[in-house]
Image (cartoon, rainbow, N blue to C red; front, top):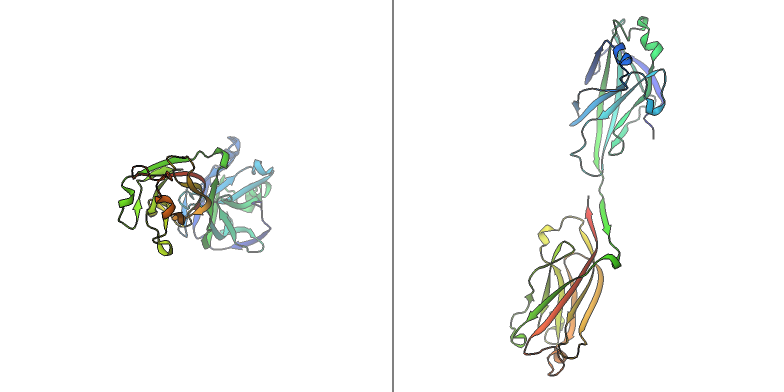
Length: 307
């Protein structure tokens, strides 16, 4: 949508409520080929605004023989992603002969939506230069003119959003972590956790239940991959992970493993990872000198965060 809007003309005996821009020796702007002038900032509705004046027309819009005048949001750097501000505004030029103000304005009285890709609204053809330069009209008297603005902020809205960053599986190098658990047959605690390791800029750990968890207690080993620091997880955080958990066969090389590709939030794994009887059976190669070797391979393929 362009800056130009359908225009109606009104006259006010009251000066603009929020900002006045007085320009002396206006002709010098044209003589010095000043394409545009931006006013100082003024505050309305907790936002900073400025007037942007093109004394000989906005060349970017191919405007000729007119003054172009716009209201612009001066500073939106602190708003973050997805902001939008709804505004009704009026732009003025002073008739110094009658001490009134000419107000070209939106004929429909529509509010205008300012946002990150649209920081400026106004009038490409605010007033014809021929009409403006005629001193009998009162807009340019003694080479001095006055413009003004009123701004009425209706609503500020923050649009919710998220940013998803993905990698191809072929380009994501898996991180491999090895955990050697000694005296495995003598483990007494319900759950054990590996040291923390980093994969895909996230901290991870393996959670092992040597005698099972829940309904599998006493019959299976349960094993899970878990994010190590949940305090860093923000609203809307999701992570797409391809991972393998494995118990190495130290004799035959035929390992016990399980794989998953999932949207990961905190932990995920298998309560029936391996049968205890099979794992503990002498000669099967999973326990050698009462050492069990557990591995994790983790590839982070995507991260989604709220904006």
